[in-house]
Image (cartoon, rainbow, N blue to C red; front, side, top):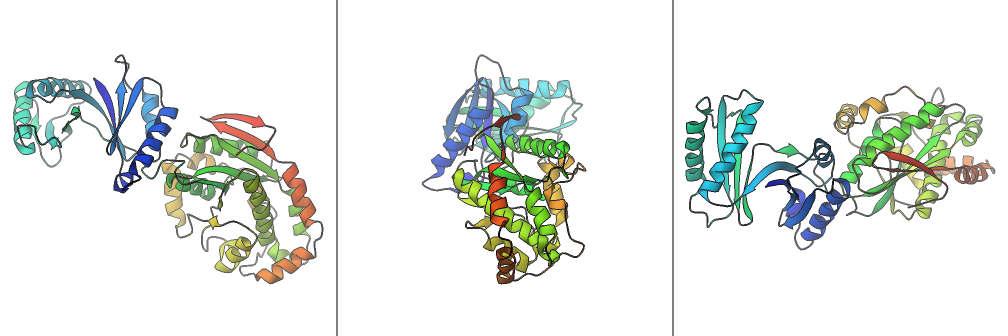
Length: 402
């Protein structure tokens, strides 16, 4: 019988509420993967039991690699915990592994979690190793760097035999850490920040700002593609709210102290995002800002920007280098889309010499001198385009949803 073994790491360290996380992870897997399996939670593992010998598909494997909370998983053969049954399945696993691979060396790894099994791990590894040598004379034992490692996991619920451990993204299951709203741009940083917070169990919606006619349809297409990639990592619908910012930017471009225009623009973005967060009932905001990366991201400017938010602003990339963020962007499958050369609101109307330091009270005095700023923010909020992205399917909706 084919079984997929799903393993966790930090979830296993939870105490009394561990099963809450385990069952949430099971639900997330079950909502994303094909319905060819029966799902079972057993201590620190989730078993996906194949029905009617249908097995796991390549698509299912790709989905499991993107479900937060999974540390690793294996496609295993389950059998009874007696030596003859185990030998039969070990032979099948070895034979199948050798069909498409010219392996020369092997190792048998035994985990004897069921202590009532009559042999200890080392003894049984020797017995099965000898069995392999007798049936596959082309193989030699290599305990340090084997090309083929057959693992035998002996448990009370049965014995599982496999030769692979596929990596998951780890973290916590999405939906275990409340809801947030992310300020999502078409660059590299904020999409990575989005997935880092999802990896900590948050479910997120997103707000994107665009600047028609200075940003065209390709920019919108780009942000929707980024949203589509993000949606692959969550079992929840991913809502994207696209806000026109052009009138606000034109107003700020023409002020006397133009060097503060980016800071003022970011504060407007925060106020608008706060209102969308209120409407959609999310608890915190998430930003891709990084300390010192650009002029607006000094401590002084970040404090001034945060002052405009009524909610806590989480910045998961605050201490990352750019290269570290780029590596994560590659890992999450975002990079090639993020570097597409289409302008977004963050990159238009940048002053020639943006301020690296700002005083919150002075910035507020500038805002107070712009009586129509609040009206333009309300107008932008009323002109929001709303999209629902689920399993990479995109649909435009005509009302706010959480």
